[in-house]
Length: 345
Image 1: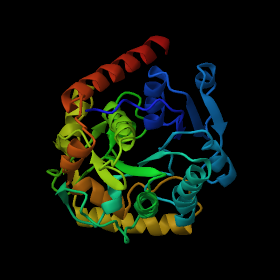
Image 2: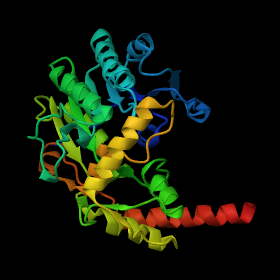
Image 3: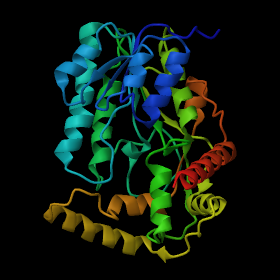
């Protein structure tokens, strides 16, 4: 028998971000009391009854206090990126998560759903049909996967009868409103700065944002059951439809009337370029991300698709929005937005 969905108050860290905001919207639609902890003000959410705490994850006292009276914490917030100082990522991703854990223990929070990333199992090679048996990375040329791996390990180790925890690993979250993945691809393609890295045949999993929200809500529900099999475990979350990355990108560009990406660079050359860029960005006071890094070169050239067996079995997860439907929706939205800009220009 399916357990009823929890109705207790929830805290969403990073509730103004892409995934976090979609999660908040779904929780509000369910009538749940929602608290959001984020750096960006959201007066429109406050008008709808959301309790808003403006703070960053490195504000330990604020994070711990935000957990008071909360039944479930969705810890979505993180410092993301392919480049930056390790201590900055560690402060947000590891120390911030420790503050969340401390707040849950201190105030009696019953469930913690942690948003991790498949990058925590990075090992420099292809990930084809990878499952959760892979070890967490301890050697990666990017601080993001390293610090997320540490945080995930501590979240799962904290699982107990009083605090049930689970880690979700959504891969390349996308959809209407995505501020990162698709906009970056389009921006680089339009100025001729996008190159196919490697053979161009690598297969990659993605996940539509609404499917990712489904997984988070299912994880909370499963954690509320006695003797939950998901407690203390991690799960890959994707659309379950690996795409040939560069074919998908070029199909998206074609649908938007843009020129396809045809120029190529070998993985070896891209990795060498990434190493040079990393060295330059380390020496110079540059605040932007390098145009290439060793981590990005590997991500663009290698397979990254995952086995969903565990998520389907333990969470009851089943992707609702297909790649085709999500892509069509995204293309329609982008075309409407472009037309609107032309009318107001």
